[in-house]
Amino acid sequence: IIIDDETISKDFILIKKHTMFEDEQNKLKIILLIRNYKEVLIRHLNDKKIAFSNIKKEYINTVDYFKNIECFDKWEKEKIIIYYEDLINKKTEKKSIESILNFLGIEYNCECFNLFLENIENHKKKAINIYEDLGEKSFTNGKNEIFHSKKLNEFEKYNFDKSIMEMYPDIFEKYLLRYKENKIKLHLGCGNKKIDGFINIDIRENVNADLI
Image (cartoon, rainbow, N blue to C red; front, top):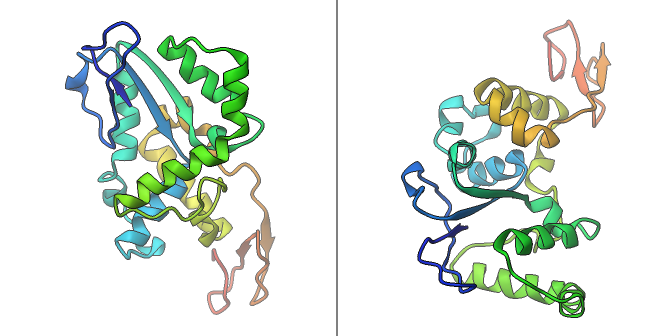
């Protein structure tokens, strides 16, 4: 969301965009909303009917997700980053919304704010209806942090993180570290007995392993 420099007093011109450009520095403020890159990229792959096993780094470079973060990182004026997962999590939604209001300099009283939080599910439904009226589709209705990436096995998740860390080491460290899979479980000498939630490894090439 870009806050235009034509803003007068507390009346804001909000511009929702999926692509940012560095030459938009004439805008006063920017709010970057991002989600787990595995969720975003798998959703794009599904739309384009590309199997994850065939994903190439060249394709990742075509997705605006990382370009937007790079642009945000270079942004010289006021900016704030908000994580989608924090907005839909009951434990963190209040803090995230307060951060946005304070960033925009919007005054609010606790009574109205608490009323808004009590009815937040209705607000989500309205937002999703607008989204779907534009011809898009919500798979989780703002309820699940993880959905699309459930299709990946542990080895694919590991490779996904590895590719992103190699391609975008700086922005990964600054903005995306929270999305790295921290617990990797190895099943050595798996043979044809694969265990879900593990990277199944075997030295034999004629078995159904994730990694030889």
